[in-house]
Length: 205
Image (cartoon, rainbow, N blue to C red):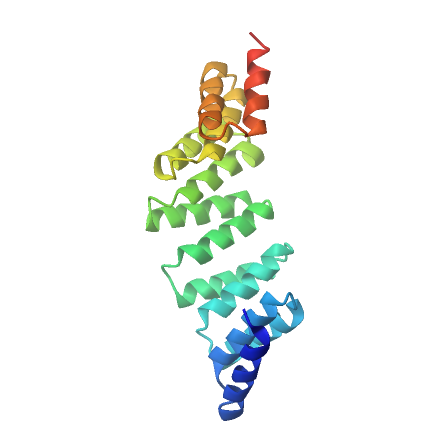
C-alpha cells in the first residue's frame, strides 16, 4: 500500500517497455487505492489497449460503472467473462448490476448461470431470493431460495434466515416466519430487524 514507491517502479518499467500492460493495470490499482477514480479508469483502459485479454482491468472498470448504475458495466463484465469463461466473480458482479438496475430477468438468468457452474455458490441463491422477494413478490420462490442459501452458506448466515422469515410473513405463513426470525436471532441476538420481525408476529397472537 505504498503507492508512491510503487509508482516509481512502475514508471521505470514503462520507460523500459511502454506497452507493458501489467504496469498500467497496477497503476490503476494504485490510483484506486488513492481514490483517484479518473486516473484509475484511464490506467485500466490503457492496460486493456495493450492487452485485450486483461481480465482484471475489464472487471475493475465494470465494477466502477456498476457502482454508478451505468449500463456500460455490462459490456466490461461480458468482456471479462470472454477472457475467463468460468469466472463466477464477473458473473456475480454482472448479476448484481442487473439487480440494481431492476433488470430482474437478466439478473436471475445470470445467477442461474453461476449455479450451473457451481451449485454451492450460496450468494447466488441469496440474491435470487432477494429478487423474488423485493422485485417480483414471489414469496414462495423467495423462501425457497433463501433456504438454499442457508443450506449451502456459512453457519452464521443470519441474514438468510431473516429474509426467509420476511418471505414467509408476506406469504402469511406466520409460524414458519416466527421460526425463521428466531433462527436468525439465535445466530445473532443483536440483529434488530429479526427482533422487530419476531415482535411484530408475536403481537398478532
